Image (cartoon, rainbow, N blue to C red; front, side, top):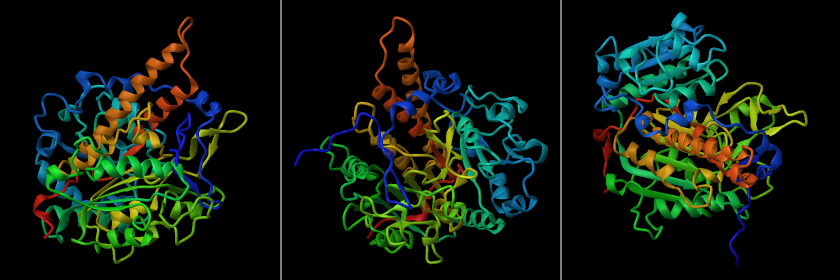
Length: 481
């Protein structure tokens, strides 16, 4: 049987819920509409800017040096701040320095439609320079609010240099639940988790995207790539619990993982790689509950999505045992969804609307309110070029690096910074390729540009949901017996 033919343009990992159709590779029109990044993005890849913090911080994982802050919308509900008080007081006690612990709310918060550059300028800091936490904005920055009120772009631009996370719920009590469970875990009074990483990746029949994902990531994570790379987490003394492909990446098994019932007990780290569900803008109430839901092994190409072949936030029930879990979710809209399609255009050139307003996906929110420490996830369409480079060469280290930094006990915002560096590096490569459009220069092919654009966007669109300073506690991890 011959190997599947790799298309000239990238494949998105998404399924239309109402029809079961997968999205096609990008067309020439979509490629033509894409734009390069501003200089601030490419600048991050320069050697002198590799670290997010400046030389005054010896250890960026140390909050007493890097600081911690929380950023609210200027008109945030005071009840939300009150609900988060256990976390704010705990972080203040750890930082123990009035210059390095900051709460930005009211007039100091983000005004409606305010850009990242405007807010930064008002605070006297630069979005392009390494972070000096003493300048007024600590390195760890937790944004509190919806992406409609504080945009995804705002978060992404700060995330280039700062370690940023976002917390957003519809209910005030969910903020309180997250804060209380995180503090309880960090104080060492929560139930321990096993030194285990669970890998859940469907390989849907007849589906090219999930076949590439499982075939690229699976062997590498299991230490079977044939290049000497050890299994994921082996150096950190973690064990891999593998749920990949037919009979493994089922809804029932993901439910068992979330409920802490797999062999050995609740894992400390979870990686999921799958199609994400996309639902029509005409049903916003369905989008709020199911956009970005994980498509399970039970789905077959062309089948509508139902409760039996996708995993939603509703499937994280009161039985969930996720307190102390770190999760990495790779799927279209797995972390959230912008208001307009980044890759689809109307005949008049306008972007196609996706949702009435940008949203955070229900699945990661359900994990967080149930006690998960943080979730690294994708807030737009995800493509196969998140784990393969523009030449089709596997680059699984883009997933492996943040996961293994988490297993080392690094704060999630610092662990996810490898994705920001990838964004910056891809933007630099794209800028050089677009330079070929100058008169007399060779013109890059459309497939080359498409691959570069998607490599850039795939890295840009990863974001941390939760407190960016959250980290695994070694005292809360137990070895498998």
